[in-house]
Length: 55
Image 1 (tube, rainbow, N blue to C red):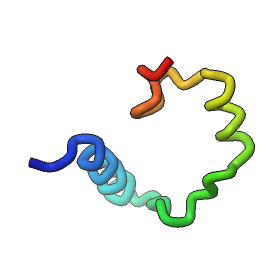
Image 2 (image 1 turned 135 degrees about the vertical axis):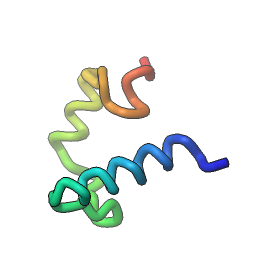
Image 3 (image 1 turned 60 degrees about the vertical axis):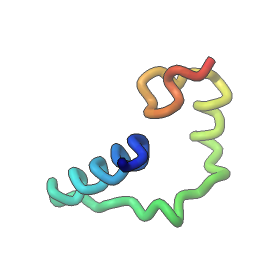
């Protein structure tokens, strides 16, 4: 059985590609992006996969 969160990520990337959109390279995501950090720090994570239930 496949890990469900990884399955969701894989399916999301497949769906992005199927729509003809640019698939993000997950290996090059800036882990120190200030806007993203500020969003998480504010606690406004409702609806964000894997983070919306963390409080």
